[in-house]
Length: 623
Image (tube, rainbow, N blue to C red; front, side, top):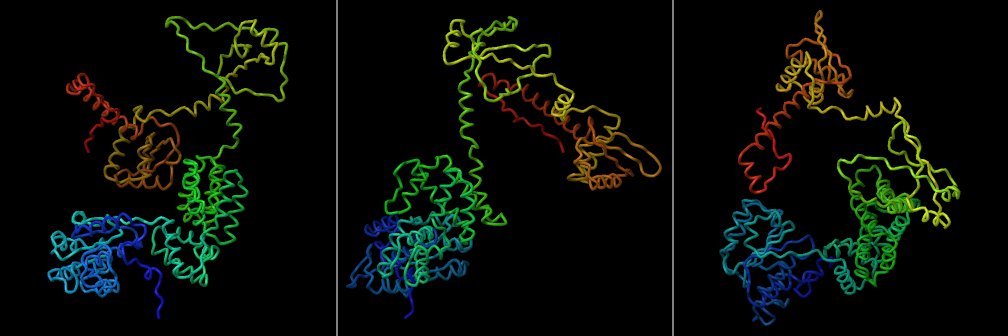
């Protein structure tokens, strides 16, 4: 006798045996009990969630004859009558399943629709089930539309697809659509426990948890993985064997990594990553397991106590890590793990990429929390002085310098290290050092404070030295360049602008060659024997490339200028780019002036409070 896989052996035969799809079961059960039957149903969802199973159970419910042969439409098919057994075995003549993935043409659909004109031979209804209906061609959909909208009273359509977005809206509007959801790992785990108890297979709970998570919401995948795990473990399911089969990472590594990241222990992070490499564990699986743990940690941090599973032995460790790691770092590490999985394929080594992803969180941590706290405290202890209103015409008079009281100067405070204050703002050269105190108080208050625990020390204010020649040179280099719209007309400017514009319009120069021509200034033209010599000047040395010079020289020769080009680096005051920018600025100014002076625009602004959005006015340049 051949072995029947678990996914087929334990396929639900009735609605009551289905798990994880209660919303679909309830709707279909109520419709069957009240005889409110639609002529077309569309079941959507990922693979292995029960689309074909629901279709077969619905077909049995419509055609069940009961154990005594006198039954009718029911939500609980008997499973023993001729119709039920034939549908389960795939021999029912009035139930037709069409795989649209391999029969997607109009000929196959027309052949199916030709059977619609005949009444059922054996059952109460004809049921046409089209699986992966989104694979049908547009012509096939069009051929089916009329029959799908108004089928005979004895015909029911059942459509199934994993991608409803590709189904035409004309088909969706003719069907009742039910979305079968991916199943939660807890639902899959509960079902696997029942299946293995029926099979008499011993299994660890943690091994079943791994299989339930690996199924990713598909019950068929879960049963297929269970079949593989039983064969791998010689009839038993143990956590170590299942982890080895799935290539998943032991959660102990994950907890160790998260704990090390919470403590800022980069050494443990690198050592654990190296241990994963030596044991041959998957880097992608490591990030996936970390994302799962971090998600549970984030839930516990946001809502303490929610999501805790007492039956899960890892719940206590997850709760401890949720308290050890701040919530913002948890969110950051979760995001890094998600995006890090995409980076594994880009790196030459998966484990090197894994290490970089984990160390990235340590790089984002503050290097010295105490230093940050001290900086915050320093800013907090310096209150802003209240603004004092002064008459507009009153001249600014510098306040008199107040000498420090003798009591404050007589009690020096020992200093353990020399403190260099930050450079102050530039002061005039003739200004002499002044002596200031930390706060101004009446003499009696200062005397009281001097006799107390807090002493004030007079601190000389250092005067910023005069800027040297090197400082002036740095300032000159850092100054922004002149706007590109400013240019000074030169003797050769008109000729060079016209020549470059001619080359650009003819598309004789492109890319870097065009930029060299537009950004350069023609300094001189020397007509000698043979070819002429033209000297160009550019501001950026990156534009002066041998290939670009040769191509620009060739373009000029094709335009009738037999020249040799030389390029120097210097200040440019007249270039085609500056002239074009100046012309564009003038057109923009004229366009804005036209809009602002328009009577209708002025009326809208004056009467309705309209505003012209800055940057919304664009000049139209004729080609």
